[in-house]
Figure 1: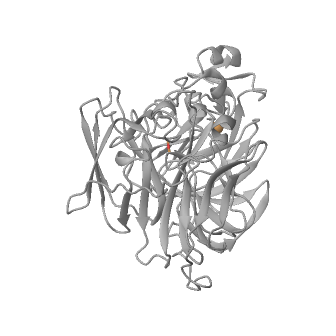
Figure 2 (figure 1 turned 90 degrees about the horizontal axis):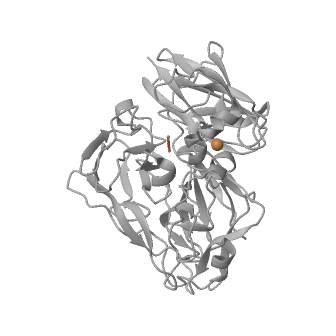
Length: 466
Ligand code: C2O
Ligand code: CU
């Protein structure tokens, strides 16, 4: 089924609320028990069959995990799937052994087995968790959930909403197309679906009230789809990116969120009672309505709240730019990329031969096809790194560094008015971004494209910090 067909079913779920309402099974000590298992969810509404998914506690998105800054995250994952899995806590600066990368930081959790993750997240903000075993299939089937670390004193809002945005490749009967890791997706834009969803629902609506102030936490859980969201008459104020506070700025420009990225917005709902506002995506050629705000008849207040929306500034060590190790990384390969040969298992091999084994991308001419390969960077703990990433390909790449946030210093040589701390920057075709960070977290960390098919096709490397 094509997206357009779904888009015509405008009245789907017209009365449903969009908030994830299922709360975690918790004990008094806030320990979370998550079981990865098959489930059924209604993605495209009652006129279509339910979709078979894999979810944490059989839900998509999985159980929301919400704790306060300073609290320990304690989550036991039970694997009730027929395949191994593991959970990565995306964007959290955590101890390496808790990072959830099967084959690198832990053994995969076998069917029937469990694994307990325990760590204290050092930063407040909007994060997420997801499977890190065959992620291009497991995340694509729904194995992800929101991870919110609340500030000690969060800004005052009427509602704190989480939208996990995703897109699905569904067939006519609303079942998931099982062509995960298809060659075309690996070498082009990744798995782009035909059904974009918010919290697992296609074209749902959100009821709001005039005057209401909403903190909207956007989390892009797509395999590869990037979003650029506009909010109609509303002017969102960005307060955080990839979990880290920015100086709040109001903007009418579409809010770009690459795969795996997060953006926190403040929305003051200024529409008239009874009116509607569409949230429209325009990242790709054809814009579409992602979801809709529908105002209730009775306003909440006459004019917008005036209280402060500043978040505490990021609390991440400042890199020492003068004495930093300078590292350049070039992304090459893919369709229309012009890469002719690359190092594959330590030897120079022609791309055609590499592609026959499913790999088409390289970082600094090295195909990242295994977790036991020599690291791209091998540095002493505490060293500052100045990292320039050059995208010489025809596709955007959301590049994720595990265990750290990177300070974005410049784009195409242009400095930013304010540096930003990101863990999954989206680097557009032919774009160059310069970052700096302190390699302060020891361990072997993945650095990879979060277009999950790209990672599976070799767009990944290791950073070793000792
Ligand atoms: Cu979201 Cu390697 O992870
Ligand atoms: Cu990529």
